[in-house]
Image 1 (cartoon, rainbow, N blue to C red):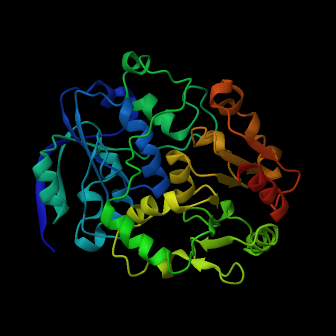
Image 2: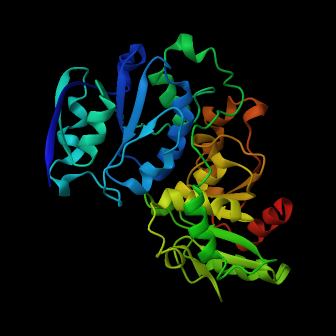
Length: 364
């Protein structure tokens, strides 16, 4: 693998207000974070200083494809589909450590083809943020993880020009290309006859098992109850799990479509009639997109920490969240009514099938 040295380039973090002062720079944002964090960066991008030009990259084009087509930030592809740190290509994290991003000049070690894309963009500044978790401890208007990051990256004089009492505007392009949409639709038509409705279930995340929806038995019970209520439902599992008879697996159905994951998700979204998911990338994407009835399942976190409100969504919240007082943290108590989610708090730690079915009946 060919490694190119790039620089000198000024390397910065989000803290100490240094980045917020930059103007008329060409900024490469190194973003080695999860899919949901890529979705949420779509909220941050419109707030950044518009005198700068921005590009964003990581090793893992499944995630980078989330921001392709954005009018505000250029997505640079690494040629590596699965998320990683680039070590297998010869230089982990562009040859840097986060500790080196102090505002001083450094040289990057970048493998091809990302090296070519960075050179063509002509970056003169690198931003690498560890994207700190707020866990509900920052007050409105910076109560979500993304809003808190914007507070650190954007000059106060610029932030006050936005109406932060309203949901933030996403810069993600939610429309799939004609070719990707056609490829996905051709395969979906094999298992989704006309007149049938599609329910997608995303039961498990990647970063933390504690936020998963039980062991799968609750999801299987929900699928059975949903079909008893209306026989026209077809169910898709994002994890290809056995959730009952004739459940479609996302990965197995679209294995022949050679596209990054975020492109497939973009094409799938307009075909979904109901989405049920835990706080992971697919749920955050559907919430940001809008226009799809969605049920968020929260057993270890609170939606106030992450997502902008969505009128098509109901969030079902397990008892653990209130037992820990997460709903009493300042992220929730300081929010105005314009930013409130539709919440259903349960008296049980486990989220069973019935409250999810009740939420579905309110949405579809």
